[in-house]
Amino acid sequence: MNISRFALCETPFYYYNLTLLQQTLDSITAATADSPNFHVHYALKACVAHEVLQIIAQHGFGADCVSGGEIEMAHQHGFAANDIVFAGVGKADWEILRALDLGIQCFNVESLPELEIINELAARKNLVARVAFRINPNVDAHTHAKITTGLNENKFGLALEDTLPAIRRAASLTNIQFIGLHFHIGSQITKLDSYRELCIRINELQSSLEEEGIFVPTLNVGGGLGVNYTAPDTEAIPDFASYFTIFKQELQLREGQSVHFELGRSIVAQCGSLISRVLYVKEGHSKRFVIVDAGMTDLIRPAMYGSTHQIDNLSHPEAPKASFDVVGPICESSDVFATDYVMPTPQRGDLLAFRSAGAYGEIMASQYNCRRLPGHIAE
Ligand code: LLP
Image 1 (cartoon, rainbow, N blue to C red):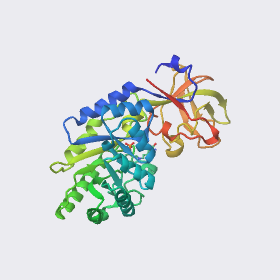
Image 2: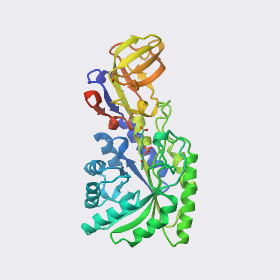
Image 3: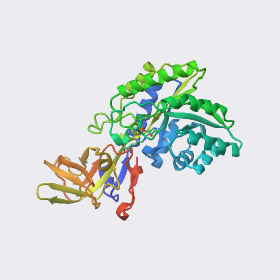
Image 4: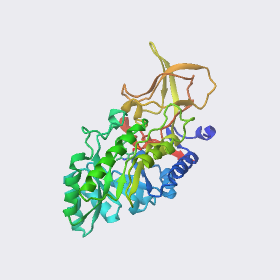
């Protein structure tokens, strides 16, 4: 990080390290090089900073989108329509129509009523929509409740037992082509055994479908690989080799079958930091507060998921260490980045970096309290 350059920038802002991003992409490509049937789609929901998207599109990955806005963003940044998949429990008609017009690779359908509407809208345009069914495999991702998606009680996908009726219904619809099954069990998954369990569930499901004479061309196993928030410097690039090895070893693939992955966080989290300036250091009744100019409006993860981000004092890394609560300026008690955090003692004007903020950081920013949205620099 070029801190002298930061001194001239208006804070708070996001900083993206594009060299690390490129190394991360190369590491994924190396880990999948022996599996030409593996295809990686970047989950745009994690970050859509222009420079970041451009590099990922140029690298040749596909796009995983969950809204018409994301589809537009992917399209504008050069992701081929045929490499875009569209998931989400509540696709609006205009979003479906736009996706049909572009000719995206696949709709990841999450309910039977949605299937009927896609068929109806495709018929209106005399097109055939390719669909995969998102199946809820009831696998516990052992992650935060707010980012667990694959349990029976979650709103996502179809229940396992509804798979066969859904495929049969799809076969009877003239403007629908069934091309695969989709699974996504959650995010920030660090216990890789959850993926092993997912593979077992997929294998069982495949065998039972085969008995009914059904072949599934594409298996989309979703995303969710976690990153190391506590040691971003020692593990700047996630262990993609171990992650992909699970699927290589456990998934029982049929001839001609392809496997799709939808990675978001693991691609962009470590390459981004939120840079903020210290406004005040306040002696409270029983605590010392570092009040910074970034708030939960700029990085909502700590307030929303209780997540922790390493905080570096960029201006005075060698200052004596002490314990502080690092808080933002928003009028909410949850606007706290860290409590009892031991760091080099900051002073007014110091620049702090909230690390591992490239995923679900800038993209989740809001204007609550009539604040400006953070900008970014990428280099
Ligand atoms: N595919 C689907 C269907 C998803 O719902 C998600 C994330 C992904 C792929 C990408 O997952 P990833 O590889 O990034 O874990 N805002 C939360 C995370 C929400 C994740 C939502 N879905 C956070 O800041 O932790």
